[in-house]
Image (cartoon, rainbow, N blue to C red; front, side):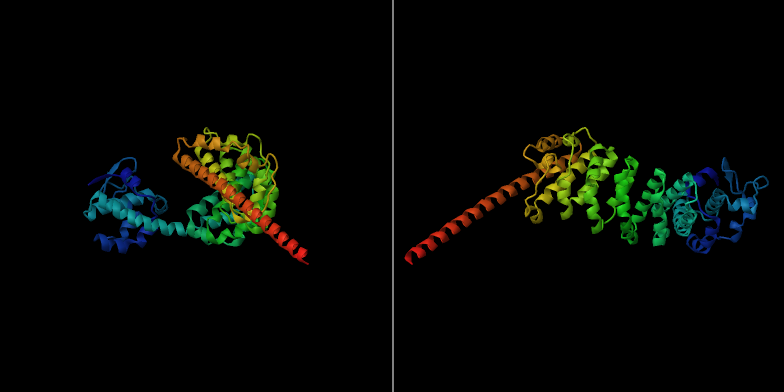
Length: 406
């Protein structure tokens, strides 16, 4: 039976020669195939017709021009795949589809075992050193990020010291290295045991975002912060840096704006930070962020942010204080008497993207609820004041009548 070697090569992912020997006995039982150690002997592969991948070859083709040394066969994964596939087809009577299915099952087990024991992530962490040149640092940090995402077991086996080692490069002078460090820490933040550990780097990350005007830095830093639980001790620093976050929202790139909106939406749910957000100074053109021409994901996050602010205004804690706002504060631009927010929302109801339409409707309903609540509070206040005055006047009249009797 003739089989193109290129077809075999493309059909199976790379499989190590040594792994096939480990699965030899198990597969021989399920396939009723007389597996032999000679099948995996590199010296015998040539004798049984290991052909060139650039053409087609039968299982019995000559080996005089294709025999290989042991090292070359060990390094040629494609040769092993071809030989195993041809052996299966010749000796088991299985169809191409059945060989494919059984081969994929074995391949998956082999790949899982190989990936879990690769040691690549540990090697990269050991090679990460301050004395490396800038390019090498970036490449190593990028490799660490990739491995953390792809190699779950190796990433989970990392320690707190590994995180500290990576985080130390936040102090590097090169902006690209800092960004790669933030990306690596973001990858580690996806592992549950490192979420709390990463909190200690929050103040440094916030300072970096506020101190450097770099869109890539803003995106990387805010993506990391959006995946962390912010410690309570960072709230005072956040109040101080709120103007910087608002500048990113108004002047940053669309990607940075989306990330800062997600961050501000999270902060708006913190009672002790809500007023700092509401009273933050914004530009007179702030409502231009609601223009339908902006990307849909930016408009959606902007609407979510407004919804969080509107919900925060209705909480008993916030309603219990008579807050004073600056003239160009975010509160006055969004919720003040002269606000044009309602016009902006009406224009988004007919936006082409459905999620923007739905979110705009949600915000309109929340604003209506907020207005009704304020009217209810005013009515209740007027009623309480009238009752208080009536009771006071009544008590005064009684007292005066008693004094006249005396």
